[in-house]
Length: 183
Figure 1: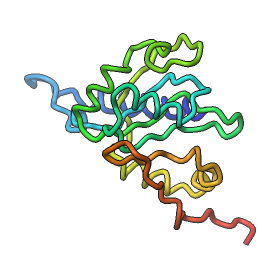
Figure 2: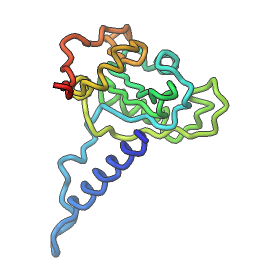
Figure 3: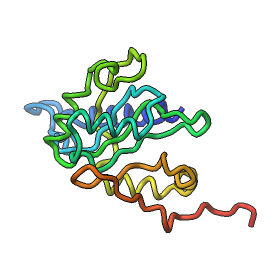
């Protein structure tokens, strides 16, 4: 369900961007959409086998040559079945690293780039709606219910990584509390 909501939001944003990109009658071509740039660094990697854990995924990304290029990775978990939702968000430190990441994974059979499970899926890499490590962390931390779930399962927390690819501590202190509806 969460993947469907994210896909619907992405499709709506893409449709809005496409409709705003056209020019007026008689113009010399479509207007340049300022949001349609190639300078983004946060991507959504789709069609990840559901049994992949965050640890398995970051290890595979590091083995694939991206150690030190990634500073944020979040693999959403379906809390009911305790498996990933089939996609993740990755922020790369540079546009060049993002381009290399996309060329490595986009359109590639999962069996060759994310091995370990008998999956016939094909990976997709798309621009994420929210850009940058700080914005992704801020948005996650602004949801008290989600943060409470994540904080109770540290292995589900997003990974923050330094320039050498080593894990940094995800800030779970001072998480906004959910309103108490019983009062």
